[in-house]
Length: 389
Image 1: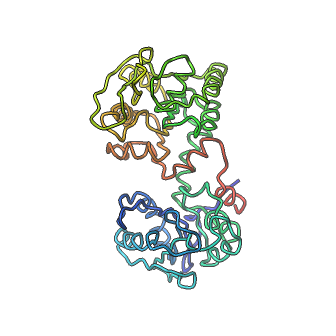
Image 2: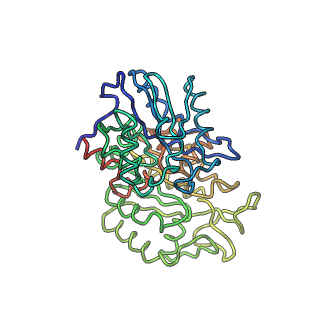
Image 3: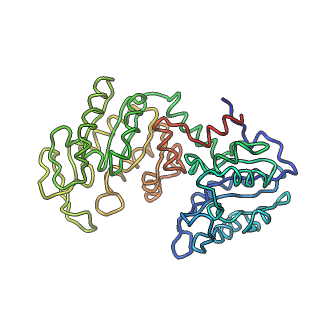
């Protein structure tokens, strides 16, 4: 079903309400990463260029719903947005103050300060929708939440549409999930199988190669009879790991596991590391990264891939010296001719840490939303937009 797009609508003289994801990480009231704000700029600028007044809606953190809490105020975000846009951004503490004349920008205070947001209260949804002539859902990072500002307002607004950022995210994942250039490979890392079980099962139906890394790989190694020492391993999910390995064989999909690993006695900086075969992990050691032979094996599988989706690091990259595998994998993908979609918080953090984000095919702004798309789920916001299309 078609979704209306903001860029196709006449916005001249209209008030446009744009739900963005401006949930920026902060420390002591200072923004530490403005990636989401920068990602929203093209949408805001497009609306202004088309002659609209803009009212922005976003949440920040997890305040007690219905109560103002200074630490979760969007005041620092309004100030930073003004600097990025080169024009004033007015912070509105109430719905009545959330107005914008053509060419101006107003940011409504944290939408979670309004009671009923997370419960998708119809009354609040109606109030948000009534702030303007057109309601634009552009917050991919919150598109998997059925909240008043992300789903309810979309359904009751006079006109509802997708913003350019949300549309770009959906287009990127469509290239992976709907009609990918093949061979298609997925790299799924992270700490736990339990959080990505549905994801792995869904991807096996779609990909040609499925690579697992990080703590997830430890559970699969244990499922194939390897000793993993004191590594993170979900022993209760070993039967599920065996089932997924059996499914990959039944479907004829490639699912390589690590052959050598980097081990240390603790996950702490400055540890002395050793590379060993997966057949020789000592009982008192932890697996914390992939080894050079495993990296070479993964690169061999990825060399022929036309499309790659990467969600989650293959080692404990946040702590030196356990980031080499993730770094070298990221460097390889950055030089690859494949269309590479990086989806998920930790994998995005890794490519940004290594300065490789601009060399990937697409960097997703939504961790939870991208995971649900890869699991084959329909995002509530997208379902609402399709219903209005």
